[in-house]
Image (spheres, rainbow, N blue to C red):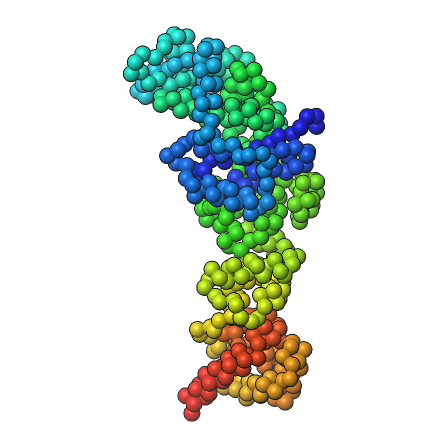
Length: 474
C-alpha cells in the first residue's frame, strides 16, 4: 500500500458507545496499526442539545480500557465552527451551493408529488438556479448543488464496487436555517483537514458516501477509500437492543469481562483468519486484512464471549486478576484488608469462573460471614448423619500443627477413614458447613484460604444447626 494510512473513529457523544461502535473503532485501529499508519479520534459533538459529558466520558474511558490508543490530539467538531462556515461561504461563492427558502409544507408537497409518479420522495431543486440572496429576516437553509449527471463510483474495500447515479441524489442541506452545518458537510471538511486516507464505518452510512464524495470533488480534494462494515445483529438476527449489545461498552467491564476477551470477540464478528478463534492483540494487528471482512451481518454469540473470557482469565497472571477482584469486592462493600491474600484467592478462582463478577460473588465467603445456608445444599448435606463425621473432622483439623492444603487434605482423609466413609461423604457436608453452599474450590484449598479460626468457627455453627435438627426429631 503506497502512502501513509490514516484512519479515524468519529463517534457522536449523543448516546453511549456500544458494541457496534467499538467494533468499528477496533477495525479502523487495526487497519492503521497493520499498515504502520495513524489512527485518529474525532468527537462529532455539533448537536449541542443531545451531546452529553457522560457519553463523551464513556467513549474516552471505553477506548482507554480496550487499549485502542489514538495518535495526535482529539478533534472536537464543536471547536471547528468557523472552518465549516468558511467552507459553506466558499461553496456559495463558487456557485456550488445555494440558499433554499422552501417551507416544510412545500417540501412535503414535493415529496408527495414525487411519490405519486413512483419516484423517491425528494427535493425538486426549486431554488437551485434562482440565485436569491437572503433578505433581512430570512432564515434559509443552504443546499449543496449535487451534480445532475454521471455516476458516483465507490470501490468499497468490503462491499466491492458500488455505483450510484447522481440522478438519484437530491441537493442535500449543508447548513440549517440557524446557520449550523450538517453531518455530511462537517465529515468531509474534517476528513480532508485530517488527511484521512481510509474510512472504516458501518454500512448504514453507505447511502451518505456518494453525497460526501461529491462534496470532496467540489472542494477539489481526493475522497478517502471506504470500507463499510455490515451491522451486528442480536442472537435472534434482529437489530441490537439494550439487552443485546446496544448498552454502553463499559457495561462489559462492569459485568466482569476482560478487555482482551472483548477485543478478541469483536474481531471475530465479521472477520476471520482461517479457523483461528483466539487472537492476541499483536496477532490481530499482524494478521488483520480488511478485505477478509464479511459482507453479511454478524450475529452476537454471548456464549463465545464467555468462553473467550474464561480463556483469558486462566491465562492472566494472578496479580492482575487480584486487582480486578479487589475492585469488584470493594464495590460490593466487602472488607478485603484481612486474610486471605487476594492474589491467592484470584489464583485459585481464575481457573473456575467465567467473569470477574462471578469470581467476586464466589469469593465473598473468604472475607465475610454468610447470612444463611443455601437451603437445598443444607437440606441435603447438613443432616443428622453428617453430625459425627463433621465432629470428627473438626477435632482433627483443630489439632493440626500446619494449616496448609496438604495437611488439611490428610486430616479430612483421616477423619473419613475413622468414620469408615468415603472422602466425598465428608468433603461435601464440610464444604456446605464452611461456605454456606455446595460450590467452592477443592475442599482443602477452600479451608486453607478460609484459615483455621474461620473454618473451626463455621464448623461449630453447622454442628449446632445439625444438633438442633436431631433434637427436633427426638
